[in-house]
Image 1 (cartoon, rainbow, N blue to C red):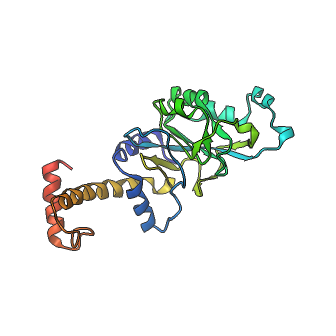
Image 2 (tube, one colour):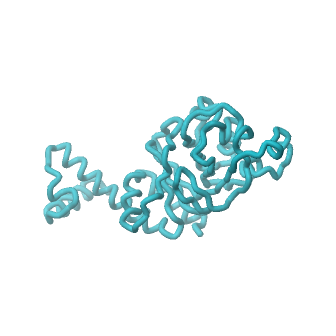
Image 3 (cartoon, one colour):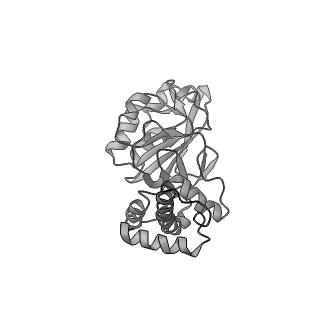
Length: 241
């Protein structure tokens, strides 16, 4: 379990780490399916989304149990999740990769923003997408979807293991989103992945500088030449990395 102090540190460490770099670090450990497929930011924020997973699960709607009146029930899983998702967490919604009906809309996501939630992700769609894009909260979906979730989705449970865009998500996993997409870091690996990817990012930034100067990737990426590592250490010192 990642505590609040550790989360704050991880958020700082991962602020400039990409989902691409994390995916490589996870692949080294045999984890190939942690990237949430077919979701994208409604509007790039130019900053990373880092938080712990708080999940919401939908199932196919059964019409006689999913009328508009269900929203009057304060224990309704979608409504309850909006009010219970903790500050600093990311709400991750399993919408069965079905974007024909909305997973949530502008009012609910505005409420999450005001409550200090770190972001929201669905493998379905959001309604009020233009409004959500203008909010100061990272939001990721498949595509806009105006119909209410009640037409196709029935909120059935929250804060349970789910699948989102083919990625397994357990409550408390670390969620990282950038302007490309979202990846799930298992909670027990979060600290070592963060430490490794900060180092990977520094080296990749060095490599990029060298390549833009005209240097060949051979011996540089990966660093199979000893001189590359010496040059990297000099670059780190010069750039305070």
